[in-house]
Image (cartoon, rainbow, N blue to C red; front, side, top):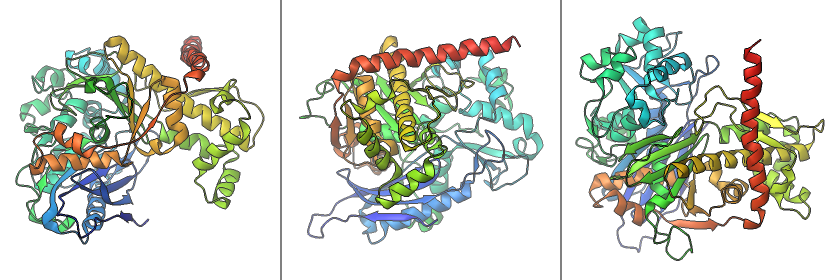
Length: 559
């Protein structure tokens, strides 16, 4: 599949402008943007990357395939631009695990010995028994991940490799990288890690560093013996300049000048948070105006969703990751809620419905996307009531891929209550609506848990692919009862990555300064407060669904 590129250049008459490149490696594609010093995305390109699923819950990628895509899209966005005006480069990526040998060559993370498949994806759930054993230790580092480690973090994946691929991978491994750190190494030749990745996914603490007793307790004492060289003993803050910038080889690959500043990277969700949460909100009549940034939550909604809230002092939230110091915003503690399947869930529900071929045909005939068509179809069938009220008898529990927050229960399954024998487009539209509502109800559950622990949140800032869907946005406003801010640039994650590059270049004194200048508000969506009672009732049903699931599972355990 060929990459796509979009360009909107400045007029030649304008004064010279500085540019920064942001590169975002998502689950299924790599994207790059050329962003100017005012936060405008001037050029954008994307290219798909391959995913292998050799067995259930195993998801793998290739670091060579990912880097090749990074180079391809970057060359496209910088084409025709005066290279002297491109001041810095920032990476963000999914928190996938990259394994290379002592010569930095890829090592297979699979039993088939396919070395090019050397990345265990973030959404890979192969290490279930390993994470269960880690959680049984109740080690003190677990208090920084909401009390329970997720299977999507790196220690259980490392333990799985040691237990299942000891000779072929574990003993030969030279370095284990989080994907964002692999990219900064590939660009600079420096093996420094970002504080963001190590703190959020590896149990590193910003005040105490690595805790030897944890690794020894879980059976990975080998990592302690070499002073953590394999997983990182040189740590940089996000946005800090790495080494001497681009190496000659990386510069050629990317189409950029040698020595271009490269920033210590971020996880993709954190880059999205950086791109939206610090925007100037004056004049928009928002409750967070004249309030500290701690009153905001950034929601990054794509294949999965992340909910990023910051605080001036550490807040321990049961079932929510963190608090992580300076992992996204320097000087602030970060809590991170999340839903493991959101965009993926909507796609699964819609495409798996018997009426999907009819939907495809009708959407194509009207030159609309399937989701735009579904939204229009819901408006047609809603009659005089608000569209959300169509699901009064249809309810979804959205944990088809387990619950990340706030229940931290990987074993939870999805539920649908209220099905009939109807098989048409109306029914497809209704299950689509109920699924979006369930995701928004899950967000409400996370926000209420954060607020009960001490957060004071009054405004949501949304970005990512799902923020382009007006129904998804309105349901989040209505169900949480909070205004939703959409950024001027839809590609907020790329703007966040570019902000890192801008900081590494030295053009801005701090990340906060760059955020305020480069993050722009586009639209504000207010909640329909008149619908509050309906959604309060939906939320009651939502919480009952998980109670019932636990009840029937308890009954079946006795079988």
